[in-house]
Image 1 (cartoon, one colour):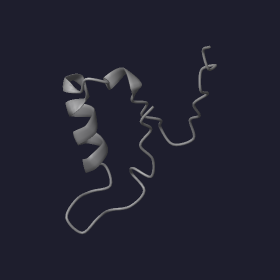
Image 2 (tube, helix red, strand yellow):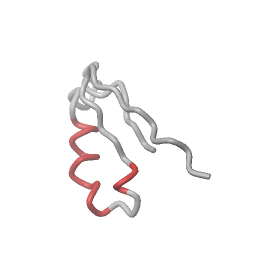
Image 3 (cartoon, helix red, strand yellow):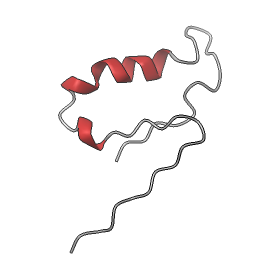
Length: 53
């Protein structure tokens, strides 16, 4: 899984706090493994599915 974190935490010199996550969201549909990406809002959790045999 790809779980981006610390997005929205601070402004960078050349971008806002949400530029990177907004770019990721806008390009996810073209990403081959987009179903493996989990964007969690602050305070959310993600439980890994059980490992299959």
